Length: 247
Length: 259
Ligand SMILES: Nc1ncnc2c1ncn2[C@@H]1O[C@H](COP(=O)(O)OP(=O)(O)OP(=O)(O)O)[C@@H](O)[C@H]1O
Ligand SMILES: [Mg+2]
Image (cartoon, rainbow over all chains, first blue to last red; front, side, top):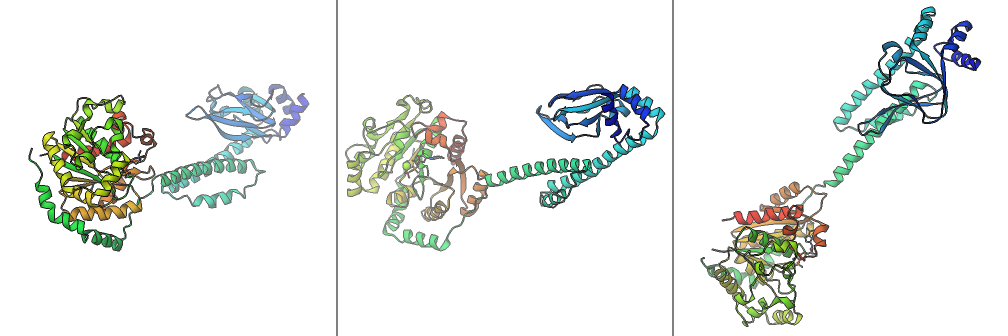
């Protein structure tokens, strides 16, 4: 069992450069999890004092929406760490993590992690690299989202087609590209939703236009006014009205 | 002096009878003394809304026009014959007289063949206003511009032209508006009926007022609920909060506001 764990740790970006004895020691400290699909690895708001390393299977990061529904923020797979921010800030978990398939994961407690970090400070660099790449990713897309939001607010939806074409060239073997893809997908799905609701409203309220054929109108009026009946009524109109009784 | 209010439309089926019966009822609910005459002798219809059929009808306008009875004999006090429909029941003890036209086919063909003297009709209406001390006399008419409709326009204090928001009605209404002006009708309003929900009522109103330079007193939506009512009852009294009822109420208020 521990051989398998050592092998798994050796494949991770954080620990791959550690000497074998350190890895062996680390392997005795981690807790191994085998979860089935839909089982919960991390619960939102729980105390955050450990990091998980996924070495087999896929998980989804989920948050709740205002209606109690589930919003999937991300998918993570083999070789990725989840919950690493709590190693630094010890804040409660910001989202839940649920198995998408049967998974194998390793949990490393913060105290053990700090000890290893003490002995092997170069690990910190890997972690910083990991966190900064996510930061870069996040800020890039936050900026994009801000720009796009302005365009949507002004009723410009055309840029979406261009951006979607750009998304198609994303390299799905890179985790950040996959994440970008998910972000873009969610964003454009929202855009389509807005657009179709707007279109529905547009067809709902059609502008009424009135077209009157003036020549035909004049012709019809002439034929009524020149009729014997109209002339008779017109001539008698004062008398007809004069018949009105006072109350 | 009692006011004569004629309800017209250039084409048939615009909802004249339904609108007339409802406006008249709403005005009667305000305590006014109201008469409703069905001058659509060729295809009478408004009696149904007040719960009448051939048997329960009694004397008709046709008999009056043939000089067989007085107009007072024809007038039926609806406030004393409200029946069991929830809307019409509210008219109990109100002052609302109906002057129905005969729905007997022989009587209809008879009057169309022998045509009547419009002056007799006019005189009858004046007598009715006097006898029943009416504040308002509503005239439901046959669609189009024929002798009777021209006559009723002429003697009207207020003319309500009903139209649907479609091109044919727009064209016909333009003609009716001009003819009414040529006959010096003192007050004229338009009322839109069967407005589809995909139009904005305010925009319809604005566009129509701009086109004809006539006030639009109300925009009544097309609604299945009215069809379901099958003209059995006074819908605006039965369902006072329905959008159609609210639009009719607006028209009734406009009528009362004319002095
Ligand atoms: N707003 C509306 N929505 C749906 N149906 C309506 C509406 N107004 C009237 N109708 C229906 O249209 C039909 C015609 O109405 P109504 O008899 O009142 O019209 P009319 O102008 O008097 O007709 P006619 O020209 O035959 O005398 C009826 O079946 C009525 O239920
Ligand atoms: Mg009718």
